Image: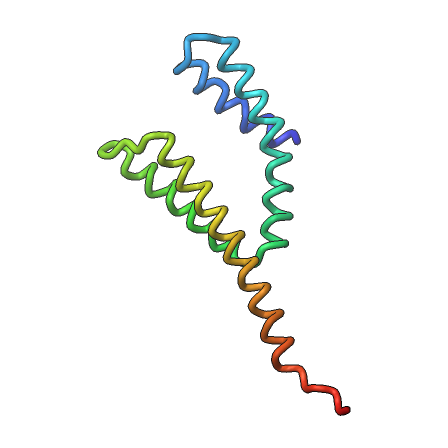
Length: 116
């Protein structure tokens, strides 16, 4: 927790320099700090539950990295970024569920029939 606080100090100071409303900048940073730790465990449990979601998270990290690299030339609207991230999560979860049911169907068809 201590490292989270130290890293948060840096982001809070950068946010205060960009947003003139101190209440808005500090309160949003505090909520982000509290939510970050909780969301980590939620995402970790989801990755453990859904096999293909780890590839979706990899895609999201690459997407955000590319977005940061090209941000000087191309500005993506926040709505587009949110839709891409949500879509990748949904596709990863749906693909994992379909893969799970497909494996179950194959197991059922490969089982030998019991003799009469």
